[in-house]
Every structure is written in C-alpha cells, then in structure tokens.
Length: 313
Ligand code: 8NA
Ligand code: MG
Ligand code: MG
Ligand code: MG
Image 1 (spheres, protein in one colour):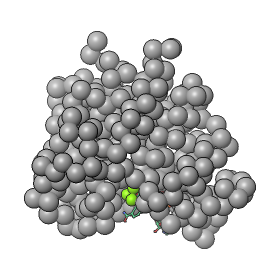
Image 2 (cartoon, helix red, strand yellow):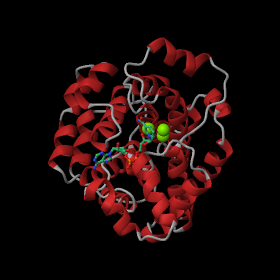
Image 3 (cartoon, protein in one colour):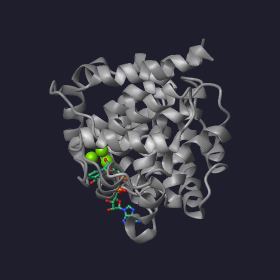
C-alpha cells in the first residue's frame, strides 16, 4: 500500500508539468526574487502554461504506454518532431528546433542529432527534461531504467553528458518512486546508485558533490553557485536533484528552491517536480496548481494511461 505506484506515476507527471509551468516565467532570470516566486506560486490565480519540457515528456509517456514500456528510437524521433511541428512555440532550444525541422523533412535522427553543434551533439537538458516517464515504468531494475533512458535520449541528444543527464534523472525518478514517504531520505542512498549508471567523469564529479552540499543545508543560490543553473544537462540535472534532496517531503518548498536557483528555472523545477511527485503522489500536489495549469486534462490523461501499465503487469 505504501508504494501505490500508479499514484506516484500521476504525482510525478502532474508535478513535473506544474514545475515547468511555475518556473517558466522566471526562465533566464538570475537571481530570482524570492518574493516574486512566492507571489506567483501561492497567491496568483492566473493560468499557467507548460513548455517544451512537458510537451516532450507527454510524447514520451504516450510512446511508452503504447509500446508497453519499451523505447523505439525511430518512432520516438518521429513523434517528438511531429509534436514540435504541431505546436512549435513552446520554448524549444535552438538546437532542438533545428533538429526537429530536419527530422520533419525526413532526415534520419542518427545523422541529424550527431551533427548538431559542429558534430559534438547537444549537451542541453532536453533529453533529461522529458525522461521521467522512463523512471515510472513498473517493475524495472535500475539498469533497465538506465538503458531505456539512454535509448530515449540519443534520438535528439548525442553528447555523452546529455545522455548521462537523462540516465541520472530517470534513475533518480525510479528511486524517488521506490522511496518511503515521510522517512528521512539519505542523499547518499539516492546519489550513489545514480552514480553507478552514469558514464562520464564530469557527471560523476557533479553528482559526488551533492550529498555534502545537501547535508550542509546549502541555500538555493549556494547550490546554483556550486552546481550551476544553465541549460546544460551537467548543471541542471544535479541542480534539480539537489532541490529534491533538500525538501523531499515538502512540495512547495522544493519547487520554490528549484526556481530560486535562477537560470533554466522551468526545466530545473520540472525535473524537481518529477522527483517530488514520484515520492509523494498526486494527492500532495497543491490543488490550485492543477486548476491553473493550461492543458491539465492532457497531462492527466497521459499520466493515468502510463500509470495503468502498473496494473496491467
Ligand atoms: P538544445 O539542444 O538547443 O540545447 C540547449 C542549448 O544549449 C543550445 O541552444 C545551446 O545554446 C546549448 N548547447 C547545447 N549543446 C551544445 C554544444 N555541444 N555546444 C555549444 N552549445 C551547446 O535544446 P534542449 O532541448 O537540450 O534544451 C532544453 C532547454 O531549452 C530547456 O531549458 C527548455 O526549457 C528550453 N529553453 C531554455 C531556455 C533558457 O533560457 N534556459 C530558453 C528557451 C528554451
Ligand atoms: Mg521549457
Ligand atoms: Mg522554455
Ligand atoms: Mg528550460
């Protein structure tokens, strides 16, 4: 009963979308005024809109639901490109928009993704920001989660740090969904298993610093200063994990912490939301956020369909 996996799936998907929409107005702001965050989170009754982060996470969720949890790279590339073409003004990164335009013209993803940024591939967080559904698949070991995260990433992001970012965020989501609520979360017990699945020395180093930072009670701005808050996976994925580990059982505090880091606020808050929602379930998502979220029924439908995979197996 404690695990209640379907509730955790819905919690993660809905709170990831809310984090994205709550963080979006602050994207690129650095530093962010804490009073502005509180006002927007707590008092405003304005509608809020999700961005590319959620749009692409919903594509991946639907993909996994239809394929009973497996990743098909060709299909996924096509589905992501079609979502971009249908609704291109959701705030996609430059490399992502260029890539999707090429895919829409029939170029194979293998070549188009590899040629981005002078042949380095993108090190942006675009593969990590959409990956939470992979960590929410029922009954997978962490190695299988990591493998599916990698396959879901490479269709757009071939830089090794961007792939590591997707692996880290997917494994973190699975660990959050497996964790016991309201019992203290030891940062080492989350960070150590994630480190077993990432490949690059840079990602290893970025993750290794997190437990001391979190245990030392670092503030939002201190974490941003140490870890970074930019659109690269190597900065934003550890930043989101730190926000979750600082406030694992207090959703508004974790989201405010994430937005308070500044920089890529929609994406950091969305990834934090996925982790907190996976630990807490949808029952702990503030009701007003769901009511303010444009497209909430689309999010709810995709989340509930993904959650039903747990009942089918
Ligand atoms: P992406 O692949 O375009 O990467 C994002 C950005 O990272 C690029 O536009 C480049 O500036 C930079 N970049 C990535 N790889 C390299 C490289 N190898 N060499 C040099 N520069 C590089 O798109 P993505 O899907 O990975 O990005 C996701 C982000 O874009 C999310 O934050 C999302 O919300 C969106 N976004 C962010 C901002 C922002 O200011 N933070 C603004 C608009 C859109
Ligand atoms: Mg975005
Ligand atoms: Mg954006
Ligand atoms: Mg962003």
